[in-house]
Image 1 (tube, rainbow, N blue to C red):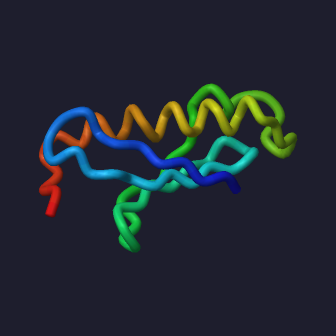
Image 2: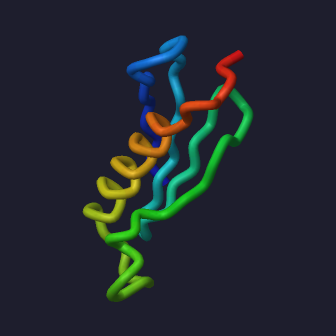
Length: 76
């Protein structure tokens, strides 16, 4: 698992924490609260069990897209 921090470009500009693993899965946190989980769709095909640094990068990218798409999320 790798940890990254990302600040949203709109809204209150809060800092979210992204945890991504080498299989393409990610989890987004705001403080101690888990907001969402997901997976990079490009890592879903092919060999699922093979860990890769590319899958980490793809998962972090997908998490950033998911954070930006939280349009109705109350940021309190």
